[in-house]
Image (cartoon, one colour):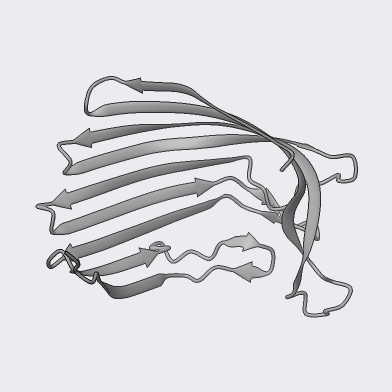
Length: 188
């Protein structure tokens, strides 16, 4: 990164419950990294090689947060990205033009924690003239805190069981569930 400029444009707190943030950033990147299919050496088209390029990126974004007595938190936000490519590149690969987020968090008596999130990611240009369509994701998490040291959790990703792509020829898993526990060693 040769130059990075970020400005928190606006932080507006209407009350203890509502906050709005707007941000803008500008980055001049050299050796920005993405990956392209290596079609010369692998006939199955399942191996990627690194691809470095130069670009300038302007990001405009914002988020609105609503907090209700630490029990309920709602967030909505998004970003818009504008790119200018360097002289050696003609196509921007695997970079979306926008993204959006809608999330809710619930804290029930400091024992049960619930998180639900929906995301949208704009379409991207993949290599080999493949255009990856807009992607939406929906995720959820549930956590139960038994005590200060022990908690149990369940994380669920891609609840719609859709087949989407972040990279050409590599589909996502249709659904992912992780069940686990955390234990914190108490100390004085």
